[in-house]
Amino acid sequence: MGFGISDWRLARAVSRLGQLGVVSGTALDVVVTRRLQAGDPGGHVRRALEHFPFARMAERVLDTFFLPEGLPRNKPFRWLPMPTLDGHAAPQEICIVGNFVEVFLAREGHTHPVGINYLEKIQLPHLPSIYGALLAGVSVVIMGAGIPVAVPGVLDALSRHEPVEYPIAVAGEDGKNETVNLAFDPREFMEDAALEPLQRPDFLPIVSSEALASILLRKSSGSIEGFVVEGNTAGGHNAPPRGKQILSNGDEPVYGPRDVADLSKFRDYNLPFWLAGSFGSPEGLKQALNEGAAGVQAGTAFALCRESGLLPEVRHELVHEVLAGKARVFTDPQASPTGFPFKVADLAGSLSEASVYQHRRRVCDVG
Image (cartoon, rainbow, N blue to C red; front, side, top):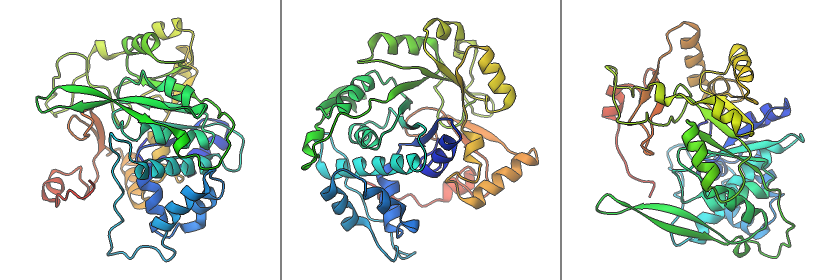
């Protein structure tokens, strides 16, 4: 789910109905600090921070970002300090706080589990982000867009407040990647708190094939509790086609039989799995259950619901297009900086239109 779209309101609504509501963990440092700069309507962020275990850290974030009257419309949001391989404390604190706030609010008012979803490719914030989610009691961590073999061990260690490392892929000038381990020690942030061990959440990697699932089962640093098996019609990011990329006449990646997961292999793993990609309907759920799945992952229907963080005017226009049978979704091989194909909905006046995209003013102001 898109960041700021699958937010705490949507996840809480789903979890309160007894299903697994999932918040997007992408850029929660940005999302939460911008809510504070917008005046924190409803006081939700400040309410969550009253329960944050590290009071001085919460106070620093509030002092830096909270604007009681809100940011004037013609003023830009404050820049955030960029995460670095050296592990600067300031951006890590904001990640811890942001993830805590979102999970806390999603869990508020009920006792059902809540999950959080990360993109493996966005690596620098992982460790403080996951720690913040654990502090808030997250029950499930979901991760796609990569091969997250290190995450299970990270969950084990952070649940005990122990130091961890995460392998970061660094691109060299010759185009080759080298791996650098990013260190994170939660004890450096714990102030005077004497914390008990945290609940170790279940880990559900998102995979597109039994081959990737097999690699994760063999090489992961700890336990995996299940899989989300995602086909290429799923929203958001998709795994690229296996083999050489071929584009259709409409410039979309061409998928073939090799890109269809062998569900018999997943049944043999004796782990629960959920199917994603055009299963968000009663018929899709029935089909998934008949295949031995524990259920389905649904995104698009929830992105268009009232509780979604999508702008109401955008949501209404998309729903209108769907009901009129005019909606079109394009699998763009170049839209995402991750290098993975990404679903783009056609919407008048948005960057999905080539003319709008070409005429936008490109400003590099985020670090």
